[in-house]
Image 1 (cartoon, rainbow, N blue to C red):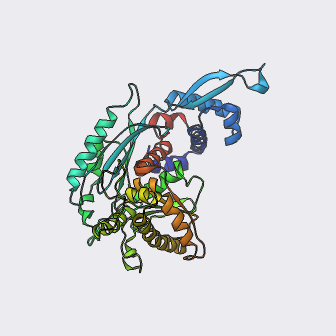
Image 2: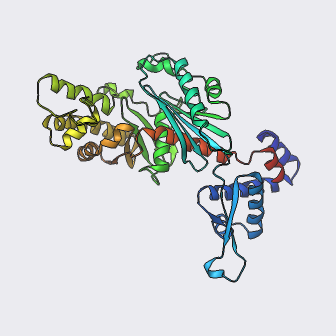
Length: 416
């Protein structure tokens, strides 16, 4: 039954209102179970305001439908002589979700259970701005097949896939193709939802901007947990912002909220280049001038000039690296000052693989931003690394699965 047909049925038959209330109660119970490791009937009664008989009945339905499993009983400490408390938990292997990050230089795919715990992940790197949309689709399909092949025997099917792309995505999940783009790689993201769905093997597919997914990931498993006013700033090669205001993502008219190309017009910034893109040329420039530096000397850097190599050298007191860090701090303090003045967030968090090494830069930005805005935000660096977008994608897919878990025809019939 479609939602429209359901509304019509309710208008024609007052008894359907009872069904709608029971569906609402079942959603409450399932949502509570989804948020806890193990739930007793007493826990759910207190949290959801339902009677014991209602909770028992709903748990019986949820077990029958495969969303919940009953755990071995344990006697409650205060009721050792009475009936053992019934305990339930989410059947985390009842299904799976895919989180996909389609970036300019890499594509990452992660398979997770219904708790969001990653079962398998795969990635491909060394893509370029000229990598075609067709080639990106091929990589997505191959990686999706690879990770799903690693699912444990007996695990449920993939129930939803969420794909993050480095392009604006509106509220209806449409990529905002631009007639005039400031970036070369835009053509490589002219991806079609149907083609993506076919590439990952079917099922509901959700599209979102990668920075918006970074914001979801941070609010789920990062520094932004419990924070309702956040800007998550993807900061590797180019800047992109996921904006959360009053706990809700801000998309804008065409999904372009958080696009950072206005920085082209800001003195002292001049472009939407990220931390990695700015650190490399500044450090290389100093090396080419013959200045003595240990940037790149660490064994793991192998002589390469990267943002991580700059931060490592700065931590060892290298003068050139410290000068680059100062220039980065000045530049990105201006960015944070603008975001703070316009959006007034509580937290600006730098995200992406480079963020793991950025703590010294965050401290320097914090010091400078105080004088650039009346309400300076807290500055932090994500600890989720380059998995930040797939983490947010998994969260978005799980939200979809939970919201529609009881849409099954059998469930709809029994909930009336």
